[in-house]
Length: 232
Image (cartoon, rainbow, N blue to C red; front, top):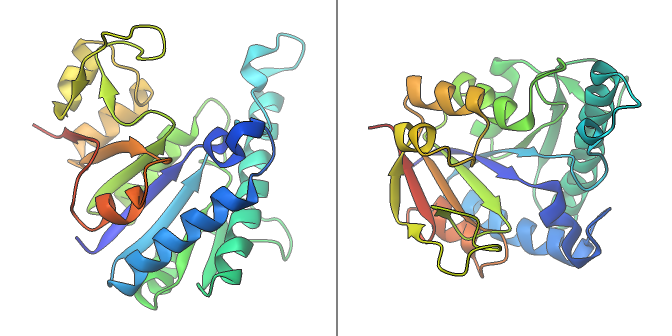
């Protein structure tokens, strides 16, 4: 495995505070990614914005504007986490699909790939740049564009279950599940658009817990501890 796209949830980075940033958690993530980079793995990162904004639950704000606020939340997350990474000795670069002055660079596949080849961790902020598309869809799109070997999805839950383990103590965890099963069984790990994109473009996915010790390093270097979502 040479190139992975790591999807981090904003809520997970907020830790127990549930909002904003938990700096200790971000330092732990940086340390794990650093070990991956030292092993020769090229890393791109997408971060959700849920630690700042869940605008879709509000009926008082236009959907387009709500999604734009969400895009900016992901930019804040990526700039913050990239700085934590730099403090830990990593080279980073933040790309967005729209211009933001000198704060980020405009995304291009060539620039992103060149950066990863030089050992730079690439942050892909701002979603797709368009409303009505989630960061799940942005994750799938960028993983396909950048020809990633796998998507690593670090969540609060340690894999894919047949029902919500928070609500059902008897929920069954899958070791392996296909994208088609995700669709057939309505297992909402990714949104529908992202699921179909990953399935059609044959990008495997590993779902694991961000709270697991060395989970990013293990799953990124091939030791799967969560659930593998296959293309078959």
